[in-house]
Each structure stands twice: as C-alpha cells, then as structure tokens.
Image (cartoon, rainbow, N blue to C red; front, top):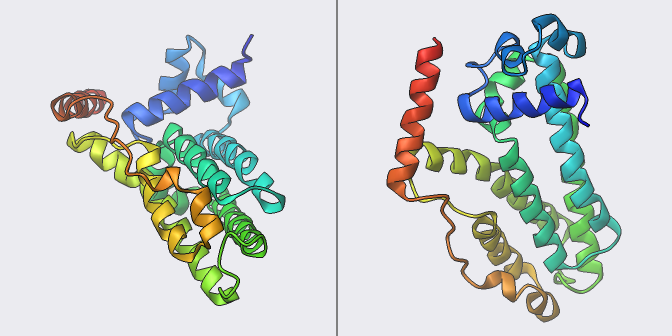
Length: 233
C-alpha cells in the first residue's frame, strides 16, 4: 500500500503535468487526496521541497539507465537507454515546461540541476569513450571530437521534452521517443565504425510517428487544459 508521501508525489506529478506548476498549489494537492494541508506540508514543508523530490525521482530513474553503460554496453544499448530516458523525461514533463522558473526561483532545485547535468556529461562521455575503445566508434576520433559528440547528444536529448510539450498544446502530431532517438542514431552513425553501424542498423530505419491522437484531438485537449487553468484563477 502506498504511503501518504508516495500518494502526494504521484498526485503532484499528475496535476503539475496536466495543469502546470503555477496552477497547482499545496492546498489543491491536499484537496485531491482528501488530506488537510498540514498533512501535505508535514512531508513537504514548501512547494520547492515537493518539486525537488520529483526532480530527484527522475534523476534516479535516468541514473539507473545510464550507469551500466559506463562499464558495458553497445551503441544499440546506448540508444535504448536514451529512449528510456526520454520516456522518463516525458513522464515528468512539467520539469521541462517550467525549467526556467524552477531554476530561478528554487535554489535547491538549481543546485541539484547543476549536479545532474555534470553527472550526465560524465556518464555520456565515459560511455562514448568506452565505445571508441571497443571499436564501435572510430579510433581516430580525438578526445575533443568525442566531447563535441557528447555535447550534441545531450543537447538533442534536452530539446525533446520542450518539443513534445509544444506539439501537445498546439495539436501537432505527437512523436514517439523512438522518433527522436532515430535522429541521434543518424548523428552517431557518422562517428561509428562498420561494426558500430551494424549494431544500430535497426535504429537507423525511419520510425513510424506515433500520435496519442489526431491533431484535432490534441487541440481539443490543449483548449480543455487552458480552460481548467483559467477557471482556477
């Protein structure tokens, strides 16, 4: 049975994703769970504490998918871990939608974000170095070129959640995580050996774009969410 703390986190994540960070306060979360506001603030004294806990959940999930690649794994497994990370990021998409606000208003979240970014750069850099040593990336790639490849991949990954959010609220056809990873696979193939390219052959096939519904349905959902937020104000 889920604890009160876990229920608060699940409810907060759902409502932040659906309505936006600013539209949902601690009182609204308490009402959804039929709890007193004091019961919520007992576990999370401030909204910042709640947001930080959700950000830490996401970080832990993504750590689990990337840590193994530092010491083992192929190019195909790297792409699979990126796909899983993109799925995780979308599950916590309010963090991307409100990133600037969170980083400027919540000091502890800003500190945590910086630490996570450093860790991600190190994890990706080590994974790519190992793949070069294994012969899946070209041996003649310099450390500077490998660092540039790392930065391009991280930049592409970071841009996915905002793009998905824009598509969702504009009613544009949605893309699956695989669709975005396909682009990363094209970038990696430029630096890959024949062995490496054979590993990711399946990932280089243009994916079918998956939509959660038609553009019309997406637009209707976006209008509904905007109306819900407007009504709360």
